[in-house]
View 1 (cartoon, rainbow, N blue to C red):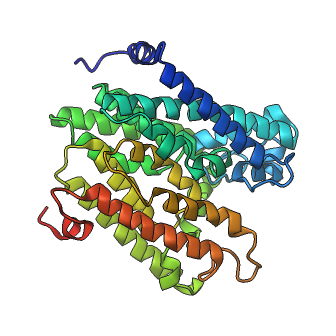
View 2: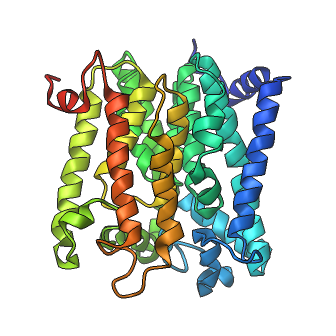
Amino acid sequence: MSEERSLGSIGRRLSADVGGDRVLIEIIVVTTAVFMLSAIIHSSSAQPNIYSDIASFWGRREVAEGLIPYVDFVFEYPQLCGLITYVSASIGGTPQAYFTMMSFFLYPFTIGSAVLTYLLAKLNGFNTGRVYRYFLLAPSMIIYLVYNFDIINTFFVLLALYTFQRERTLLSAASIGLGVLSKLTPVLLIPIFAQKLKSWRRQLAFVLVAVAIPVLVNAPLAVVSFENWWGGYKWHMDWGLENSWLVFLFPDSGSWGTAKLFSQILMLLVVVRVIVWKNDNLIQKSFAMLGGFLLATYVYTPQMNLVLLPLFVLSSESFLLFYAWELANAFIILSWFTVPTPPGPTAAYTTPQWSALIRAFLLLLILVQVTKVRGRTLLSWVTSKW
């Protein structure tokens, strides 16, 4: 099919795919109910409520006063997140109105993620009941949905998969580029998507589009206020271990520099191994890449689970450990504020970090299922001839 098909063509195809579909309407209704529940439990007007990153931003003077992220102050989230925060604060004017606006902006990405998961399940011949089992009714969808910006990243990853399978590869590349503006992790998908293309010209075009979008957005901000723009990236580079199993190997914060180097080596090995994995299934490779990254990274915040949930739907496996993995993830924030300071909830041997360790072990077992090919286990897959 022609690469020059327009975005309007994709929109018409989406409309044709979803029009009059009773199951999809039910999924949208359930998604809306889950979203509302998540918004309620994180709202400051609910007592008690569960902590939310996006609600906490209002406590920053710069946000409440409507200053511009990356220009007037350092903001540690990518640019699409900064835009939503700025607009929500500017329109809201009060803590509750600000939170309502933030929820308003997250809602279409949530609906879009549910719709795309359903369409991908149909397109790939999976039981659409898995959308409920592994996505909509997952604990993370309630606890971490109206919590941070990760549902935006999830939407763009799904849109990239959907448009790629519809052979709209440049739109897929653009989706990855937009995803990077909400979370840096979609950049890991660029090589495994590009390698599916048959000619080097198409591969180069894919990479250029995916990279150009975040570069074009970031460049003006760097010119206007380099210190505030760079400060967001430096914030992450300076951050310590958080919810990673590595904290049990490196419990002393003085050794975290070594831990981060070790983590970066592991991440590099994951990326290289998945790239050379001889598997034509792009969904499986995306699962292995993103799941392997979460296992190797030294910062694995619990909302990062959201991007993996639809990939469970788009698998032929029955994941018996799924809800144990998800509950361990949910318990991280539920126990976070029960830990006195010192030692603080990021310290080894605290309840949140035991939960994170259990989550990591269960994710490892899940990746054994995902990467098992012709009866091989994860260990044989890692050590096999590439």
